[in-house]
Structures are given as C-alpha cells and as structure tokens.
Length: 159
Image (cartoon, rainbow, N blue to C red):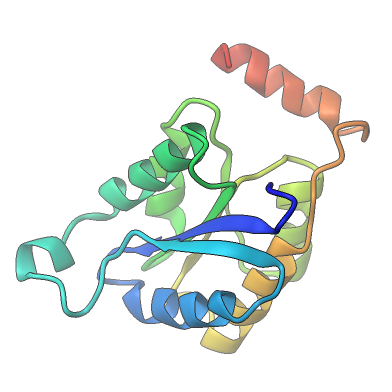
C-alpha cells in the first residue's frame, strides 16, 4: 500500500455491475483511498463488453495487483464465487468471497487477502457497502501468528 493510501481496483460482470458502481462511488470519497481503478463492466459498454464473463474481470484484477499497479481489489458477480475463483488463478493472489464482517476481517488479518469478492444476488447493498469500508481498513501484520501460514501458501506458489 502506498503511504498516500490504498490503491484499489473495482470490477464486476453484468450480474454485479450495480453494486460495483455504488462501491466505486463510495471509494472515490473515502480518504483512505489514494486511487480507484474501474475495470468494468459498465452499463454504457458495448454489448459484447458488457456481457464479458466474470473470469476476465477476476483475472484482470489479479494481474494488476500482481504487477504492482494496485494494492487490492473489490469485485462483484452474482455470487462473488466466480470472480474469486478467477482471481485466485493468478499466482500470488489470494481472493475470498465474504458476506459478513468477521469473514471480511479474517480474510485480511489471517490470510493477507488482496481481493474481496461479493455477490450482488446474495448480499444486500447496504451490507456490501459496509463490508467494503471495513475491509479496506484492515492491514495484514507480517509478524502475526498467521504470517507463517500465509508463507506456506506463497512458498507453494513459488512467489
């Protein structure tokens, strides 16, 4: 994370675009956020772009984080599961689907998760907004008891 604040990606497929747009608006006014990158989809996209399947969104977000262009991402699809699976295909990325405060907290504090995913068809909008605000406030402690467990994962990946 940059000293000026977190650099975030937001993205969604067509099943999560409405929540993505609301979270994007929230993040743009959050003083903890230095930059927000919208990787789509957007309602005004051409039909072939708007219906781009969720794997492209998850993989694109993971690659941007892996390549150092962002610190974390918040992604949406219908359930949050598809974009999480896609992002997790990128080496070095840990994505988690979470729809409650405790899971959001532990995704970062226990697992150094860089990608939070949620489902527009699963969680209410106000809860999604709250969870996004909470999630960006957590920072993984590399000296925590969880650090050794996260190291097992990164060693396995060869990162």
